[in-house]
Every structure is written in C-alpha cells, then in structure tokens.
Length: 428
Image (tube, rainbow, N blue to C red; front, side, top):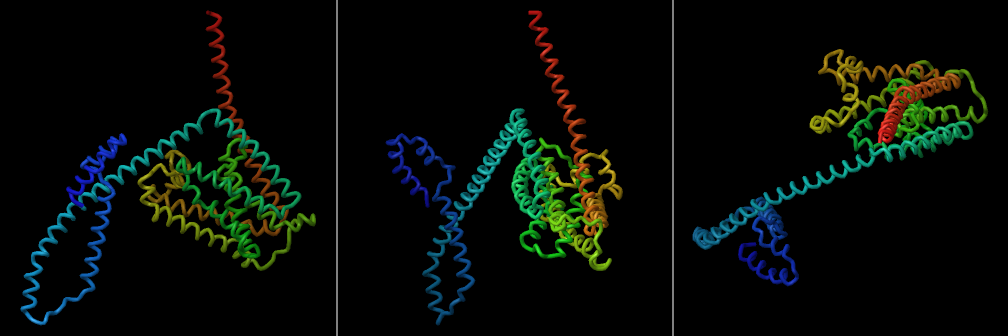
C-alpha cells in the first residue's frame, strides 16, 4: 500500500461520505495518523513474507552452476532486481515498523478504556450494595434463609440422615458461587485457597466418586471433625443469621462434620442404637495411620499446592497488588495483634514458615481425639454439640455487644434528631 493508493481511496470515498452526510467518515479517512484495516494487513503480510523468506533460506541449498560464465551472467542480470527489491522491502519495513507501533498504542489505549469502564461499574455496584435499603433487604433475606436452613438440617438429621450429603451439596454450590463473587469484588478471593475449601472438594470427591473408600472416609472424618470443626472456635465463627458472610463461614465448617456424622452413625440412628463406645477395629498403629497419618498427607498435598500458588505462580501478582488479602496478611495486618506477635516469634522475615509450622502442628493436634470420636456415638455427638454451642455464644456476643450497640446508637441518633426538629418547630 502506498500514498497514491490512499489518495485515490480518499478521492473515491469523499463524494460518498458527502452525499450521505458522513462527515465523520470523511474526517477519519483524511487523518494521517489513523491506522486502518489495510495498514494492519500490511503488518501481517510483511511478517508472513519474512517468515517464508527465512524458511526458504533454511531449506534451499546453494545451487552450483556449470560454469563461471553462467554465474557471472546471472549475477549481472539479477543485480538491478535485487537492489530494487531491497529498496521496496526497506520501504515496506519502515512503514510496518511505524504501523506496528500504532497497533500497540491503540491496543494499550483500548485496554485502559476497558479497565476504566470495569472500575466504574464496580464502583457503581458497590455504591448500590452499600445503600441502606439494599443492605437491610439482604440482611432480612439472609436471616430468614439462615433460620430455615438450620431447621432443614435438623429435620434431615432426625428423619433421614442418609440424605445429609445431598443437602450439603445442594447448599454448598450456590454458597460458594456467591462467596466467590463477593470475595472477588473485595479482593478476598485468595481466602478460597485455604484448607477448609480444599476439604470441601475432597468431601465431594468422596461422596460422588469414591463413596466406598474406607481409608478416604476415615481421613475425611478426621479432617472434617478436626481442623474444620475446631476452626469454628479458633476463628470465632458465629451464628449471625442476618449476615450472609458469617453464615456461609459457619456452614462450610459445620456441615462437613455433620455429613461425616450421618455417614458414620447413619445405621445406628436408623436402628436407634447409640453405643457409648465400640470395640476398636484394627490395631493402634492402623488407627494412627487412618486417623492421623493419611489425613496429614492430604493436608501436606494442600499445603504444597498453596505455597506453589502464592509463592511461585502468583508471587509477582501478590507483591504488586498488596490489597489482595490472604490468611497470612489477614493475621499480620495489625502489628499490635496477638497473631502478629505469635507469627513474628522467629522474626518478621520468618512469618511465612512460622505460619506453616503452627498451622501444621494445630492440624495434627486436632487429629489426636479422632479415633475416640470414631468409636463413640455419644462422644462424637457431645463434641459437635459443644462446637455448636460455642458458635451460638459467638453469635450472641455479636448481637448484644456489636449489633445492639450500633442499633442503640442509631436509635439514639434518630431520637435526638426528632427532638431537635420538635424544638425548632415549637420556636417557630
């Protein structure tokens, strides 16, 4: 494509644009800095031509001539053509280099425009979601749904415990989808790489892929009733029915233990046979292997994968965007907190290995009582009952110490405003 072609194209298109009132098209065609379809095709054509030239040079072997006279004649005849071709190629190369820069610049500008649009949409969405009417409506819906789900779980455990896995799967998928959307917006989505979410995947695999795998079942019994259930106490999960976030955290920690409880004691519940303690199946070493070593191996697989993700694959991303929250960042966000001091016991630069070590020791410690829970219905039921009571106590603390305080302050603010308005109207 050369300048004369562009001029001809402009001359032929001007009357058309004028006849149809297309002043914008006419202006665009006359812009010297614009990059049209043919410029882009020229870039692609030149790249293809260079590639073909390289391939032909690599594959073709140098030909041998029969005589020196023929070589001399061929060189003299092709000299002018080669010079002409080199000039044309040099000219095209210059235009392509210029157009390629324009392509990169246009792509960068469009990307910036798209990023601005996305940020603006996120801002508007957050603004809508933070409005009092929307928040109050969502809290009401969450409260009703939370209470209903607790009632349904109780009914399934009492009437049909074998359906607990189906109920768990039905609740888990929508809860995880909503959580990811909300966490992604707040840059909390890296929390979903934590061990508790990995345990949900393992439980689904066990229920629908390997339901008869006893070893995997015992390992998940330890994982569900060990680190997952005890995390309700450690992380102060609470039954706050109007909070979708708190109820989701509660469900993903309490539902897997209930599923394993119904799978372990389903026959006993159906026959109304509740043994205080059953004879131990296997030896002590086999129980240690099934309830401690095997689940610890599953934990180790997760830990390795988590470190590869956060410290290798997404390391640059996390270093660049410090707003993305991870478990370690959450626990060390306040220098005066107990968790920060505990993780810095070996120095601030060793917070990550300290965090990994403490979490592994904590996980292993929760496995110690799992053989007892496996062989005793009453101990298992009492254990889950204590955890549920703790979550209720955490919820009561939130409602009366946090929520009620905010509510009273809001009511007091409204009362004072009404008094002020009454005094103003009385003076008038």
